[in-house]
Length: 376
Length: 131
Image (cartoon, rainbow over all chains, first blue to last red):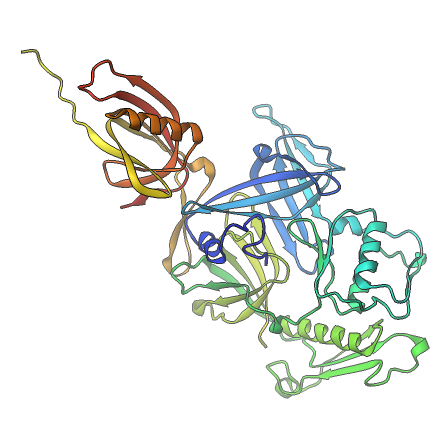
């Protein structure tokens, strides 16, 4: 979730922002044009057609994409577009950036009765890293995580801030890492390997065009960022949803091991980590009456990283057992892996959910959220 | 004695949206409303209803009025030039939030009818609220 009082909303309070999102709103959209360094060039809002959408998927390679319509031609290959949405209620306007996008060559829609409109597909800045390294790439032993990630981003030719929270002096890799040319890796893979080894989330590009990551924390350990309560007087939950519970393939035993011949046979407490869910919840061994194992080979640098990566996988597997798609009023503050509380007695839905996808229409229509259950 | 046309004035008041301590009263001779698209009313769980509108759904009030005091005309002119956010309370009791546009003034030679007549458009920036 975007921080409610972060710029450009830093003159508002958290309560004001939340009240506006739930209020009788006027929805406006526009866009800023940025150069390849992220510097503001021009406000092109007058040429933005209020149509299209922003789509986010937590498990997609490129998390955010946009479909935007512009009534002017741009230097499609060099500029970046930063769409925004304003919600106004009670004289208070909440502006929210919706991402910074690289633009694909658009389709020009020609209609003799009106001015031409370009239909544009845009991809967030992860797309700039999703290109082959094209050489063998190495990170020397002892290189700090921040330094290593910034170096990879710079080597990819991308100019954008890298914000890693809670990053200390610990090296990204104790023994050095090498990505061979023949493996055909991308810069994004290099960065995500570095982050994964350190127990960090995969890289994301935030709403303002910064690369971000933070140490992985399971959804159960993260606070609720937004509440959707269908019983509330100010609810924005649309009374229409699809809720699904799929337990068939959910493991209840996990084995993680380090795939490195130089470190010998996998050994518990060193290069082997096992998690067993004996009795917790409907997917446990006791409840299912059988063991369903999942085995994962990793390249973890040490046992702590192996445990962190293993626990993260366990959380992902367990939360994937229930999913829901709900429609709510436009809330452009949604971000990456948000935690929401959904209370909806009529649909038999309650508790904490992680947002793994959303679609925000730019015409002010209600948005959809794809949710995974957090609580077991 | 010549016939005299009877004109019933209704009163309206302009106030600063963030300071309601003072108001400028005008005697309305004409008030019409140019409606844009009506805000969409959406229904959510439990029957909760709210309006969701686009900026071009905004409405505009076209009004002609008489202002008695020179100070009132000067203040309205200043608000119009600065696009100041105002409240307008109209005779039926509605309060509308918006800004003054197309402000025109004709000053009277005599003082009996007030200082000046004005015409303006008041473009609403949010929905109206009943009071």
